[in-house]
Length: 139
Image 1 (cartoon, one colour):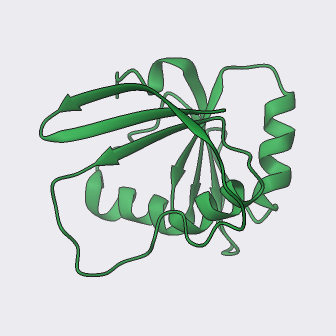
Image 2 (cartoon, rainbow, N blue to C red):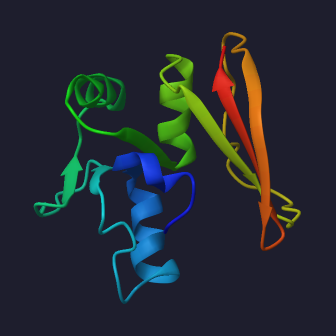
């Protein structure tokens, strides 16, 4: 994970479904976020480690707290429910939206229904392995 996205982060937030997909499907042999402190938002009882913290804390309050601590940027890795909660409170400063060349017939909407307009500014695009990243900053 040596992409432009990860060079400026030291903390990852993700929901339970995203973490479960990582450990069961995407990388069952190795935790791919081992260079970062990870917070997994869940109501399940799980044992935390020094590197992976399972928490049922309100994600908005957690993110506010983490932003006050010293360190690099925080990556909201997924899933849609977590992203929707943070977007609804306008807590995300930079959006990395990846367009993957697959047409889905259904699924969970990333942004859901946002109750306000959030203006973004396109900063950069990059393409690799058939994927296009759109990088936006909140205006």
